[in-house]
Length: 107
Image (tube, rainbow, N blue to C red):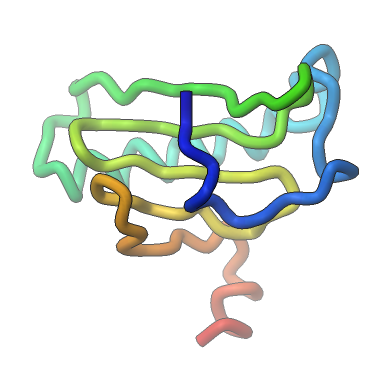
C-alpha cells in the first residue's frame, strides 16, 4: 500500500471507476510506463531488462493513478496531472513532464 501523504493532491472527480481505466487512460498509462522505465533504470543504474513493478493506485474502488518502482526509486502519476513525480525512498527528487508545452511554462 502506498503512503499518500507525499503525492500531489487529487480531487474525487479526477478518479474513475476501475472498470473504465482501459479505454480512457490506456495511452497515457502506456506513456507513463515507458517514461518511468527509462528514468528509473537510469537512476538505479540498472539494466533495461531489470523488473520495474507497476501498481495501480486505488481508493474506494476508484483508479486515481499508477506507481512504478525499481529498488529505492519510484515514480507516481496521478489522473489529471501533466507530471510524473520521481522519488528516492520518501524524498521527491525530480519531475518528468508529459507535455513539452507544460515543461516550457514551468521553466
